[in-house]
Amino acid sequence: MTELHVNTNPGFFTRINAATVKLRDSEKKIIDFIEKNQEEIIHLSITEVAERSETSESSVVRLCKRLGYKGFQDLKINLAREVIVPEKQIHEVIEKGDDVVTIKKKVFQSNIQALYDSIEVCNDDELKKAVEAISNARLIEFYGNGGSGTVALDAHHKLLKLGIKSFAYNDPSLQAMSASVLTSRDVVIGISHTGSNTDVLAAMQIAKEAGATIICITNSSKSPITKISDIVLQTASNETMFRTDAISSRIAQLTIIDVLVAAVANQQYEFYYQNLQKTRKSTSDKKI
Image (cartoon, rainbow, N blue to C red; front, side, top):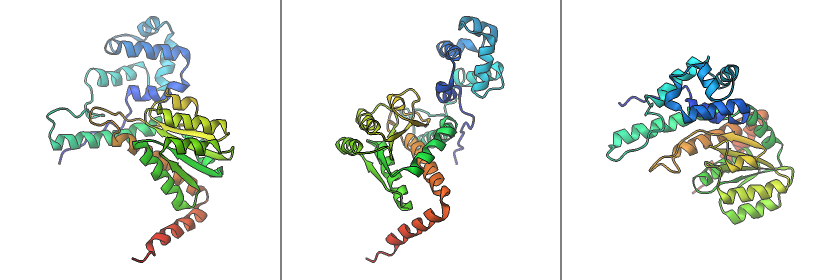
């Protein structure tokens, strides 16, 4: 059996993506310098990095700590692994000539890695806010198109089993119409890997203007969807050739949905447990 090699320690660029919104201007300058000098950086001292990025050594040290490294040397070691000896098992591209076994290994590795990375970039405080908003909502609506639309339907299905009123819309016109009649008691969860789907963005903007709480599930911390959202739940998965709309992105999205549903249900465990038994019985008792 082919062994899977998954990096349980998120890479440098995954960590940057997760921390972007928290970074100071000086730290962003250091990140910019590192991104433009990836191979050279591992040969530079902390003083040289500070000088060339026009910051200070203390800023470099602070950035290292913020990204979860022990220090500058630890950052360089981990960056070297990605830049000089790329860990091809992470989000590998399926190449022309790959056989079925190789493709299987690459796809499984990429999907598993997406979960390891997503658990790091999905902010705990944002998750707690999302659970609170959903728990107090009169109505929850999910908007998603394409692959993300299937995630929206799955989320609706899971909440329905608990007896929580929700709707999932994949059609842009229905999304917009429903969004226009929402209130401050309602929650909209927009799902988009790129965070730039114009139809979903338009509907979410309408919902925001109507007063609804806006939550997004997206892969990019800098995408347009994050700008109009009150709560951002981030994933980390790469789409590559032959794997656009890859299952790795949907697995990460579905896992966040599972976390939200489980956390909401756990707040009123007995009540939602009884509802779950009712909805299960309603389908199992059907006679053919």
